[in-house]
Image 1 (cartoon, rainbow, N blue to C red):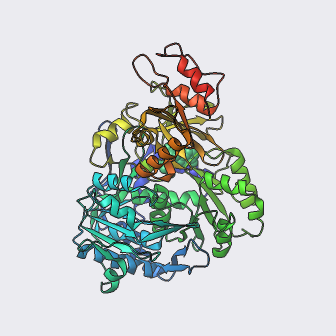
Image 2 (image 1 turned 90 degrees about the horizontal axis):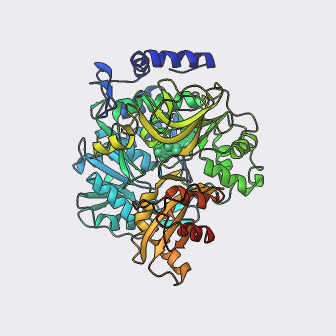
Image 3 (image 1 turned 180 degrees about the horizontal axis):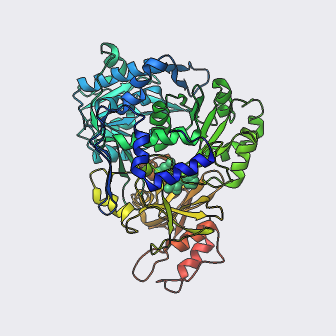
Length: 629
Ligand code: WTA
């Protein structure tokens, strides 16, 4: 159901909150269901227990692929642009993609994978990653994609948490000028993962890898003699589609669970309406499939809508900071979706990298993953959009499955820094710390959602209680996002950032607790506290305060070793930008670290540290301020 004007949006919005079941049932009717649902929605936010399109039967890949074969079998689904622009690009039509997906699905079946089994995908941005995702969905296996920048230890934790039976991976990866070992990381991880029976390895870089007999086989050998048709497994609306691990404010990353029916309806509806994608256009989302943005807006959303997408293996600055714009011109990209951190990095590189390119095909620009500052918004609009393209600043989360608050391209008037208005079906509310609703406009509070939507999280894998306490227990009968938010005089929403202990570094969510436990693995570290601080390019950087048993030793060496620990336990994305070695941390008399003070020091807001009188030892604050980096 496409929204066509601002008035139409308002009408649809009203309809969606007055009669949510009728609204979503109309949206869902546009898909192929093997059996229609008996009931649209059952829910409570207490347990929580949310079910959409109850007893409906479907397979999402029939909607992504089979359904399009007659009308657009020969249309390109993906143009693949390799890391190195001298390498051969590839493209897949919908028909080719369909057959490739069926082949990999048959390979997985032959290896004994059946409906409900978990399969881990640890791969760089090659077309085979999208194919593998869809192949899992084809046979009802639950995919768990792990971003190929995570360490062996992180990968092992994720594989163990969901007992994956199989891993699909590559020998190595190209990322900018670097060549990264991938299979080696898998080998190391699998020493700790007895559940994995099979590993299928795609040849990407040709580097020598160890192949464990009886466990590891080559992708090209496996698909050689396999049928290119594979019947789609019939799935219930509420059967698991995928698990995606994401960081929270406490403990280990949690496996966010999305299910087949509601996720399909929501990914497609939001893709179509936010970007106002038109038949025949070329769409490019620069995210990695290892994150939710890649799941919903590289794989599922665009394919459900029959779109043509660019899939990019590389990075924005290789071979130089003009790469994005070169690719936009090369494929005549109409809709371009990226993250503020990339925009800021390219802005810093200078407009000389933009000038050689026409960029005349662009119609819509998108932003996702973190708050976009007004300056970056303006630069994006002026230099990339040439003042002609609407910017859709899309706010959402791994847990929401799809975009929640965003302008609709060319329909909603935009305002720099604002995600603007909720999509139909989405009922945001702001609450104070006690959970009281803050009504009216020109206000600020904690962002919650008060009514279910089809794409929402159903559980955290293997630990439903964690889902309840994380999202549904802070405020009664509300889903709590963890974000702070302003609603201005026009009723427009502006997300101000996380209000919990999650840091958003270059659009990647990182839990401070995870970084602390990695740092604490260093034998000389007694205790650590990690906070975020404003960073010009990354949005937020990581500031670590550490207490070491060896205060006076070589501090630079200690810093290097700490970074190595973080690389080992999480990956380079969680590397602290600043490490301050301290003799104590500000603690209350009950032993709680006063993070508020540490945050202020890291941010450089030294004049207003607040009340320090309740601290066990107020003198540590002076020392921390003096030693500030
Ligand atoms: C932040 C990414 C401001 C927010 C899709 C959220 C944003 C977290 C925006 C989710 C935006 C995402 N403006 N902040 N447009 N989009 N965020 O799960 O803090 O990787 O809670 O999902 O990113 O990150 P996640």
